[in-house]
Image (tube, rainbow, N blue to C red; front, side, top):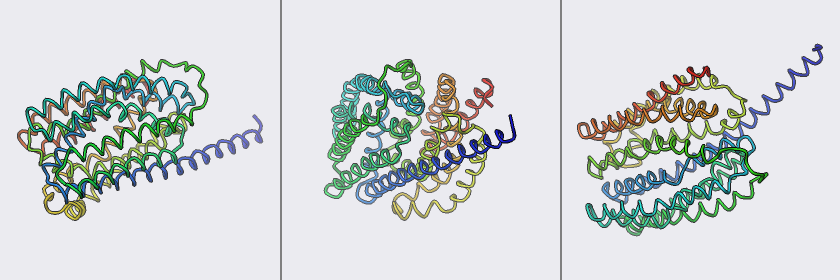
Length: 413
């Protein structure tokens, strides 16, 4: 190679890196704009519940949402992970078939939710059981058609994704807050507008997303098998993110679910920004434009977040949610330390998925979730909300250690 050729190669490499960084900045901006809108609507909804409704009703609302979200596992959400990974590499030809596959599986949710609703209708109250039964009517359209989200992110159509997702969250927030203003204790009406808006808008955005499909040649990929594997992977993450509220509701009064939910709100908000930032670079990461080692400095820097926010978190909680939720402050301060661990757990899982090591991700998450559930069962009855916070905080470091073990075992570190 001549000196001239070497210099040209350096320039090409520099241009490629500069182009990737420019694209990353744009993606990062769009994804964090989406999260800002999503977080604001979520905060407005929680403030409305805190100020207009009782803690009991707010806890029931969270409980119903958690149960319905958990049942969504039957819709084979692993399809969405398969779509994202394959479409990031230019293969989205199976998109329609994969969505149909998810929709057919989601029909199982109808009898599951109906039976669950009947159980709570009989054992608890009509107010709690009816919304769960009602959810079964909208269920297939609420979750199986969410494949549009993964397609748009994979194809780096972040502006469209932000527009659609923001429209969805704002519409739900406006409708729910509207019902709260009219009748703050009508859980059935609140859940009806929530489920209806989710089902209708997801259906509409799925139809819109079909216009972004490229080649529709038969996909040379075992997407069904991958979808089953990734669904099992989703089972662990869904279990962790939803069953904590359910466990609190089983052992404690519904008002304590409200306390727990508010205590997690600040850190969950930070999780959303963290996740959207990671997702903005994932297409490049899957194309080998970035290495796993590039994320380590970010992990270290993120410890500044809990240290900085620890003395400050009490002010937004008491200001936004009133002194009625002052009990949540201490729990929120503790859970702030989950932020850097959440970041590394998410990145290390994606590093394994990138290398087709989904089974290793499943093993890491399943072990972590078993530990989380056992810890919750032991601590929540004894320590109340604090037990749930401690169990949730411990979940991420355990997952990181296991993912790192599998990365090193496969010579990826």
